[in-house]
Image 1 (cartoon, helix red, strand yellow):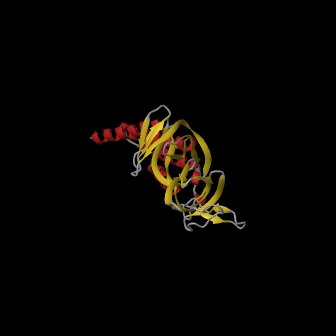
Image 2: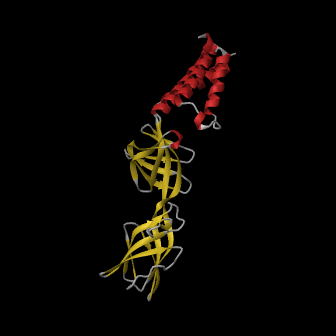
Image 3: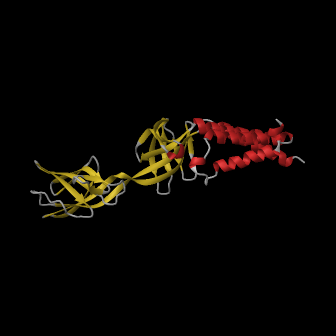
Amino acid sequence: MKLLASPGFAAGCGVLLAAAIHPALPDSLRPPLVMTVALALLLVLGLLLSGEGLPDRLVGLGALAVVAALAYDGLRGHRGMLTLEVGHGTRTFEEEGPGGRSLGLRPLGFDVILEQFDPGGAALLRVGDGATIAVRPRRAASHGGVRLGAPVSFGGADPSRLHVAVAGPEGTTVVEVAPGLTATAHGLRISLERYFPDFALDEKQQPYSRSSEPRNPAALLHVARGSQTWRIFVIRAMPGIHRPEGLNDVLTLTEVVPRDVARLRVNREPAAAFALLGAMLMAGGLAWRSRTP
């Protein structure tokens, strides 16, 4: 017990803990999480025992509660990313393990729907009980024991709509083609069969996408007029490249509007309330000590 209460013991634990969590430490030399937690607990325990008077012990007790809660959340909590489109919902999130390694989908515990996502980065969510919560870039929100925060927006691999120009004897008309919807122009019915964000051909001359980034967008369209049907490739970088027999109109892909997708950080922290209690004890002890002569 005297060893734990000595300043040298606390200083040694502090040095080891700082080395263990330093970002410059290579992953191959980083100690297991259990060892890091044990060092933090020993450090706080040493501070608790070496304190003089009730205020110092109250600060140490609060620090011990915070470290214990963080350790429990590190071992029993879950973290990951939630990906949503506006108007869509889910009950799962993609859990992340050490180093950001994906652990697959995990139940969220409630339904969540992304109702609105503004350019400033604020996300309005509707949760399972019908309540709405707002998540902002610097302000997380909690529901059902889960903390949601840091929303970011990015363009999804699939488009929300394509702008296709149809040029024929009647002139040129630009229509919007969206997944699951059919556009009409010059008596043609045009629908999207497949989209390629980064179009390329493999060694067998089969189309594929090299990435999910819209570097070379292309699409395979299903076009019909009466009983006649065609499958037409449109590539934005090569207008009018595909002109099938029997179709006098020329189709060109002019613009791709990507779908806005929001990603939110998910943290399930079962001991969050205990950590808050510890922080309150620390604040109370510090306030008490500042008023003690």
